[in-house]
Amino acid sequence: MTVATNDPPRIAVQAAIFSVRAGTDRDELMIPLVRRTREPFLDQWALPGGWLGDAEGLETAAGRTLAATTGLAPSWLEQLYTFDNASARVVSVVYWALLRSDLVEAQRAAAGSPENVEWFPVEALPDLAFDHRSIIEYAVWRLRNKAGYSRIAAALLPDEFTLAELRSVYETVLGKRLDPSNFRRLLEGSEALVPTEDFRTGPHRPARIFRYNAEVDFADPGPL
Amino acid sequence: MTVATNDPPRIAVQAAIFSVRAGTDRDELMIPLVRRTREPFLDQWALPGGWLGDAEGLETAAGRTLAATTGLAPSWLEQLYTFDNASARVVSVVYWALLRSDLVEAQRAAAGSPENVEWFPVEALPDLAFDHRSIIEYAVWRLRNKAGYSRIAAALLPDEFTLAELRSVYETVLGKRLDPSNFRRLLEGSEALVPTEDFRTGPHRPARIFRYNAEVDFADPGPL
Image (cartoon, rainbow over all chains, first blue to last red):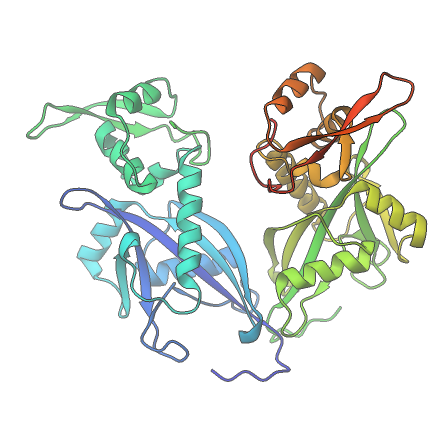
């Protein structure tokens, strides 16, 4: 990329998109990256994004990036931070987003990933272009921080889930184990959770299926 | 302002700058505004700021705006949010800043305010250009929120202060009264506060003067 020194700074919009994938012994927090087809950092992985269009809103551009990368609309989308790179004359407005894991799986099964897009575990990122590794670390910090005081982690779950599934998502996001009976007690007092009449059956004893009260916002105070 | 429809969006940097002014019966949270000398919103008040310079960093541009508006360096400077205005083809990266009240007073006494700059109480803002009223409301919310879990409000104080002066700053920022003995008890357990051997004398009984432990960051957990 050559830059004329009298060009004004340009605006890029990027997205750190998170979902959760069921692993063999534990779930993993996943993020889609795009392999660059241009210099600089040719062939390296980077956050998906692009230039802000003329007369395009920032959130619209972030939504466009999400759709192009995953084919999905996010269950949560929020501005993360605006980074500068004066030497490259670029200002990057970065959003972070959460996708429901079941929708990600269904979309991948139906359509595959777009060319040059691949999902990576946040704990095992490849080499990244620009300062995208530190941007992802900051986005993970924000997600963890917000999961500590809101019910945001539920934006990664299907509509219906058991308490064990909800706890597993929290554990994946927070990167630590939670005590099952403590977790259950914290949730029993919550208005956000609505029990259904259904149970998940399998090798363990049947577990009641819950759904979230749609009137409680993801950003409202959560179980922790 | 005329805008060619094929111009790429431009980047502006603005600053919501707060200080505290001693009032007759209570202190007031103050913000400097700039009277516009151009259309649109000619003659209306607006947040200080300007276009991001070629090869200029965002925080550098915010610091430049602060210096031009107040002649001072901030004791706290943080990015607030990036707003878009697709119809005006402008993206505004807004910072918020805190200034020590004693430095603001000294600077105003020595040099006056720059032409077209005036300080207003946050509780009594004039009509504002663009969406700057809602930006200021968001900045005040962030300041209040952060004051609730950090010692950020101390960035508005001189180096040395009494507990009553510190409490008054918290009351001004939070917009509510705090119980004096509760406040004192919360602070006595804090490592952030260092007692000096000096006392403030006057009509009331002498009050010990404190200073902050310089090793404790403004963003570290605070007394509330």
